[in-house]
Image (tube, rainbow, N blue to C red; front, side):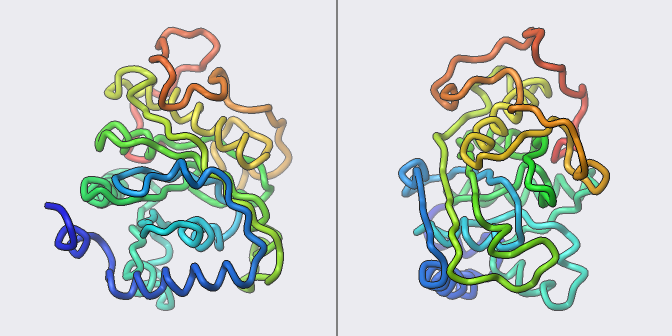
Length: 272
């Protein structure tokens, strides 16, 4: 299925989403000082996964707001518990995910796959939640799984400035501040080994987080984000052992490299 019929069958209300996205692009370009780097890395047509860091609620406005294509996004299932967002966010293309994992998370991946199979852009935050302390945390493997399943590239995205625009806990976005959105070179999970091996998904995800840390300038912490983790932790310079620039054109990785801690033998849909 291709063309307009395919788009109409995707999650969300396409008319409402088109109106909102158009208004959002105008709003952020008028009210904030935007710098966009690497926009040429986002394909003008065809499917791709965008994987940004996550610092503020408004990240989900700035990433699609600097693109000329619609972008579907994973969003936390808790938005479905609030009457203000229960109808609006899914209508605009948000795919809710139960972050506890299991079959509910798998259903979200299935919905995301329909977006990619239709040749569209899909966004997912690899950390799984916002970083409250501005560090970059260990990524979950949902983007890698989608890359393998749908045979599409993942584009790392680094955001800067959004916590100043919308500080944690604030519902108000401060105008006329600076925001930088940087798109890295596309990466493919199957270039890191056998896509059916959970260790490949882990290696690829760590390499993806390394690229995001370079784009965002964040200090990397090799543990999953959470209320208990986002306090005082010993940072690292970035995930090991993936060097920059290997991305989608790099060679396949060996699965026996001793410098990388082996990933879990079993991971659920989002690597929990």
